Image (tube, rainbow, N blue to C red):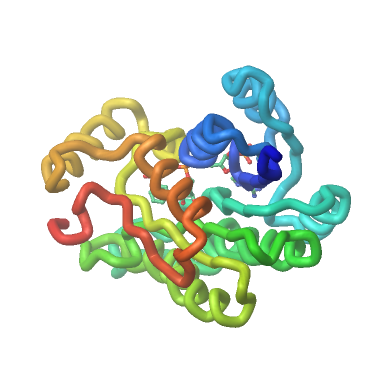
Length: 240
Ligand SMILES: NC(=O)c1ccc[n+]([C@@H]2O[C@H](COP(=O)([O-])OP(=O)(O)OC[C@H]3O[C@@H](n4cnc5c(N)ncnc54)[C@H](OP(=O)(O)O)[C@@H]3O)[C@@H](O)[C@H]2O)c1
């Protein structure tokens, strides 16, 4: 008898790492639902997946929309939390400390709020994978604020792995990855940052969304992995 087809929801699946993860999981035979705020982005992501995924638009920073989405969804097996945030970058001396609260509001609360709303229908034999960032593991100048935000996700994962057992709870910490996350920079600035980090990174390049998608797919599929931080950074953590 063929096995059950598992269903993964990728929150923030319309772009970058989330979209690459959706593609990878669809390729392994899973059912996948991608979400994001922008209907246009979702439609173009859905087309790029050959129409093979389900899609739903909601804002993960709005608790009512989160509850509504998960309330309507029905049972599912895996949750990947890739909604982005970017606040908190810059030298500490001039850092606007309200950016730390802003970073929590746009990344940490949405990820936690999705997990909380998902719990009644998320298969406890399945998994949740948060996305943090290697900034929380580096001693690099200029990342204290964004590290404070992303560090919260690294901290809660081992606790939730025990509290929510047998649900597996993991987190991926990506290094510098070429995705639309960097679109806040002009093209020439972005290329300068990418080549600076490629030079610092032991593997000699920055990451691709597919690199991180592979790490996420591993955590989703390996039933003996829980409470783990999987850093996917080309070795940047040890060199920056
Ligand atoms: N790229 C990097 O170098 C890097 C490094 C370390 C960590 N990360 C982390 O990796 C994760 C994925 O980032 P990415 O690089 O793939 O960025 P991305 O290409 O900008 O993708 C972000 C995705 O999240 C969705 N999203 C953002 N805010 C949302 C919200 N409030 N509700 C629902 N969906 C939301 C976006 O769609 P809409 O805009 O339409 O909502 C999009 O689908 C983020 O948590 C980011 O912080 C990235």
